[in-house]
Length: 264
Image 1 (tube, helix red, strand yellow):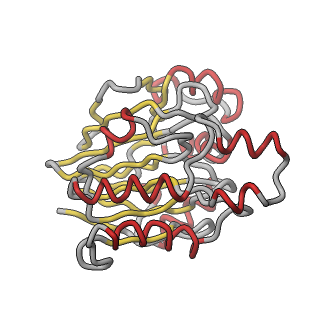
Image 2 (cartoon, helix red, strand yellow):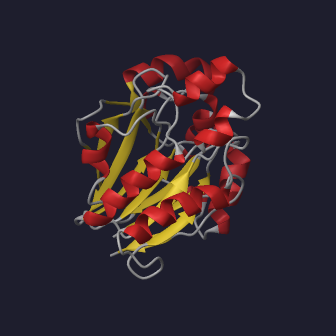
Image 3 (cartoon, helix red, strand yellow):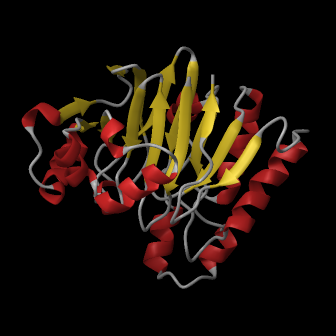
């Protein structure tokens, strides 16, 4: 059994709760410790029941509360060497026993979970996404990715639940308030995934058996939940899918927990 619930998703902060068997995992801690604790309780999870933290990369909207939660609940933090090197000065002192190193493409076990971190194309140091598995049920998280490449797709395909970045509408970005330099960064191969690229990926995921799709990490200035949803919905319907029966589709909230999905 695996469960996934997006607690927060966006440039202001990211955190996702995943349950694999009896293992409770936080993927990223980009809000304050108290906000994450409150969000967990809203979905019926006591913070004391957490087993570990996984970090995708060192940007502050993914690590803000990691240190305090690790110290408060004695939680191991799993991250790549490059991420540890960049984030350690930002999250405070971590018990040496709770510093766990991982590598993209190398699976590892974490309590009941079998976890595969995979390299992601983003302007950070050694960033990864995660596929988390228990008893052949899989949940994947892939945000902060500039392009959908073979590595990312091969790792998230056939997952029962996928949280995938749908960051920006290209027209809104091009005509929006960002500076030319920032627009180039967002659209680059190490920036963020557009609605169109996300939607195309989702249509392919449908063929591999994915049942629950959550669109995440939306831009506040260059996207809206309705635009992101409609773009992916159109691609899924064109494939002949019935939203709600063949596949569920949701946009993750920026400020509050979204639906908790469970597959057994």
